[in-house]
Length: 176
Image (cartoon, one colour):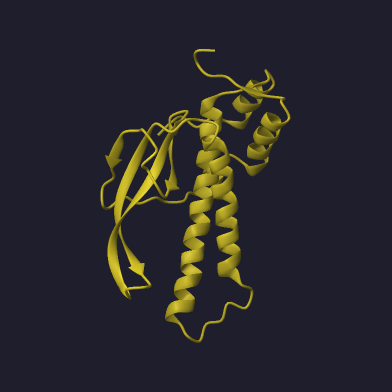
């Protein structure tokens, strides 16, 4: 894993009006892990609803978890779109086909981004117009969330993104 940058180090770089791919990678990593935490929470509530017919989600926690998950994935997508994908990853998974009322094996494709030493996936539907190498992921590929104390604060992520949008910061690549 890439070296995690401290808030003090990040602020020192931001004070120069620049953002490095490492900082953006750490920001994307942090929101991605938060999204996965919410994904797991959503699954927990869905399974409670599915397997315990007496359980009632009085506060609509499953939907709230889904909204939070999507909010963080959207931020990750915003950061990924600042870079070019390096390859396509494919993964075979069993999915429920509602029309056939059975599971079927499908191939799922992801654009793969490398940002400052961190790797990210963005799902895509169609690869026919994308000219990138395709790599197959292991069938047991799995992703996990993380404790938020190990992640960049959302305050810092927002500061970075707002600074980029307002023109306060420029992304500095190694060859600049």
